[in-house]
Length: 222
Image (cartoon, rainbow, N blue to C red; front, side, top):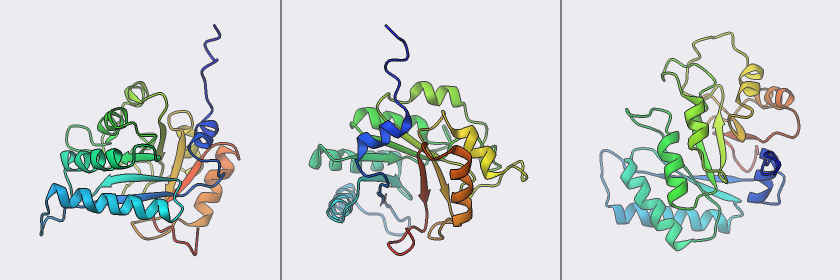
């Protein structure tokens, strides 16, 4: 048997998620504000409402992300959503903790446990950043479920490159192969990516490799 026969290019994986060449993945925050804790049932209901509204509005997929909530609360909401919507395209972004600051380990575990099609992590690990230690790229790749589309970022918001001269082109090229989709962002939540940044990343990785834009995307600027 040809060992390469099972290989799927990331563009093929992306097409399996949706036939649309340009896809819209809605990020649904599972929030637990520190000043006003809410019950797990309330978190679940809010997540269900977000997912329902997103797909009614034309989303290709929905990614649940924790902001102020703990891992078990994120998992509870995810379990509730998957039980209610067993066949929709779902993903997760666990932001990490002291034990694993990049979040890939539990994100991949949740993907296996709840039949998720997507994992998105903020930091791909190809950039050395002051806010995180070194990431074991080989361990992450070995842990990734085979059928999951894994997207992650370069030159991400809220990160400071150790090498301030490193270009978006170099980072995007390094991420290819480690991730299925390269993500670029604006400087912070709600601020859109500079179109020039997206253009430079696209030129570097070529027209056939998946590229995504996060933060500040609106119906007007998409």
